Length: 112
Length: 114
Image (cartoon, rainbow over all chains, first blue to last red; front, side):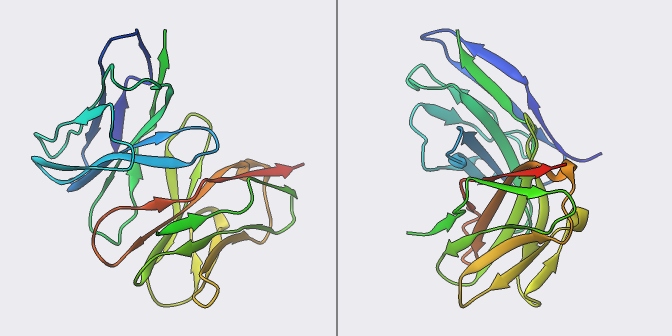
């Protein structure tokens, strides 16, 4: 079945540590996205990429970094500069502009 | 600024009754509108979309939505609610400008009471 796989499902970060969240899709979609979800705030866009080797900052990119070396993969690194990383992180992909985004099942990040 | 508003944090409805979850939007150009549902600790699942054409859009699980251009609204509806419909619902918008960026509402929690 085609879809988006996020791993791990749960992740814990120690202070000063960088952590990387994985997102892989086999839908052959060009565009990929990372969102942060906090209670009562909906989804906020962190980074997005429309093609391989290119990505743009979203609304809350500070403290995060991404890469897009392959069409299928769009990993997100939460750096130590992100002082409040505890949240539910969602990855999505999309084909053409009028199509719906497809979401993975998320990674819940907490601080130890 | 472009935005999507879901004015109700929570909607309660009795099982078997009709339900409505409200959404209004403010975007430049012609909007593409979407509804998604989220169950606990899961990603968002697509329910339906409006791109163009009929103002009444039918989607998954018996849901439908009505696009109203003059009121800039896209309310989600279902004629008869099920307990299993209880979840978090998100409205989203983008435009034909091709930026590929979605604008999401803050979500509405639907509780269907048995």
